Image (cartoon, one colour):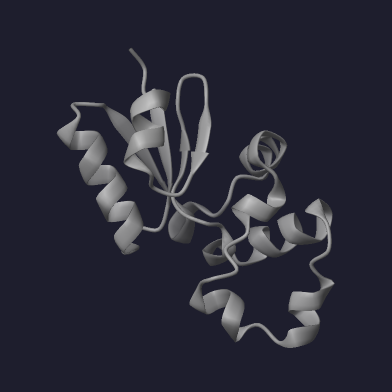
Length: 116
């Protein structure tokens, strides 16, 4: 089963979910706003792709943080603690495929990751 993690009103998440539906791929959706970021999954994602890829430094939530908070993010531990408390800091969508984890929406990479 494919699981999409993100925020439902995020345009990228909307595009990603539409792409999955268009491909005929069944998937479940985990809403960060309602259910939070699952700590065990966050650890698995960090192991698979690295905290730097998971941390969304381009978004509004990051830009609204004070400089000292931003500068305090120096490693996986500090990044993951911040992403847990502020789910909007996780780059979206995170998708758990059968045998891969992807971050962000990239149709070409997704075509390779999708189950056959």
